Amino acid sequence: MKGKLLLGEIAAYLNVELRGDPLLQILGLNTLKEAREGEIAFLANPKYVKDLPSCNASVVILSLQHADCFSGHCLITDHPYLAYARLSAKFDKVAEYQNTTHPSSTIDPSAVIATDVYIGPNVVIEAGVQISSGCQIQANSVIGQNSSIGENGYLAANVTIYHNVKIGDRVRVHSGSVLGADGFGIAPRGDGSWQKIHQIGGVSIGHDVEIGACSTIDRGALQDTVIGNGVKIDNHVQIAHNAVVGDNTAMAAYSGLAGSAKIGQNCILGGDACIVGHVTVCDNVMLTARTLVTKSISKPGSYSSGSTPLMSSREWRKNSVRIGQLDKLARRVDKIEK
Image (cartoon, rainbow, N blue to C red; front, top):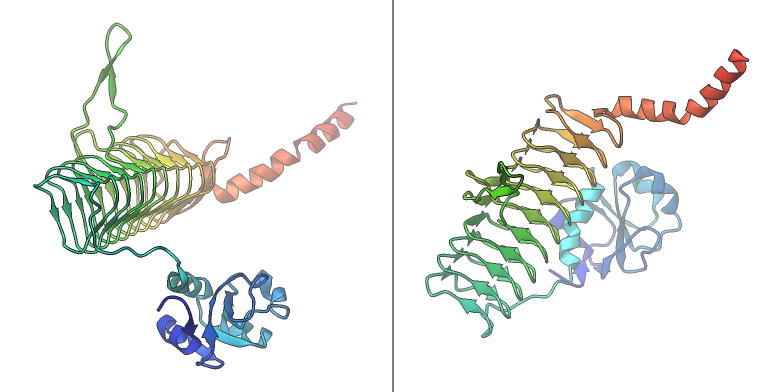
């Protein structure tokens, strides 16, 4: 269903209401401002309703309340952004690979690999590895001893999977990421030097996880580091040894969990948000960008800190406004004291 699609096919795939010609041919996706004839745009934010009259898209995905604002063909749904997200897969131009093994790859005889797996140039697969049906392993990736990858997994080029890493079904790992490296475990000696603590746990990753480029998930010191089902990890994210990330949590770039930190289900970490070691964050928590969590959070909600101590986002916004008023207040105090 990739490439040129009929509007009726798209409506059926998305299970949305169609107002228009089901035989209209659709060539691609675009934004409201940039879309051309033959393309589909979407309206997810009401503040862009003003762009509908001038939109050149043949079709717009929008909600019922905005359907009369566009004169062209419409796909009507309560969740336009989700519909756009699902439809994007049909226009993805990612390369497709045959089920072949490149002759330059190195595969241990004890590895168990499904017959329909693609293995690219210079891939290394060590002893005891299991790779399930439908997987793609791109060039120069390495899979260490006794690791496993579930069905329809995807490793982009230059991914490193250490030993004893268990990966579920439909997991995508992007280039440069490292799963299962040693955690930062050291013990002080009496002379001021450090004794390495060998990390003898592993990494366990659930189903439907995506891990961005150049992210790292360290192996556990004794037990596994655990990533739940449906977790979405951006580029440049660090997850330390024995950390636990709950189902359907999303972590933006440069966020991180220190050793043995635990974050619950359905949480969102903004860019550069960090959680210190041995702290627990409950389900349904949002940490705004650059928030530092230094104590456990037991109440769902949005939290912020920036360069200030952790507080609720509402308190933080109030205090941010007050900080901006400090100069004015100081001038008023000076006048009063004079």
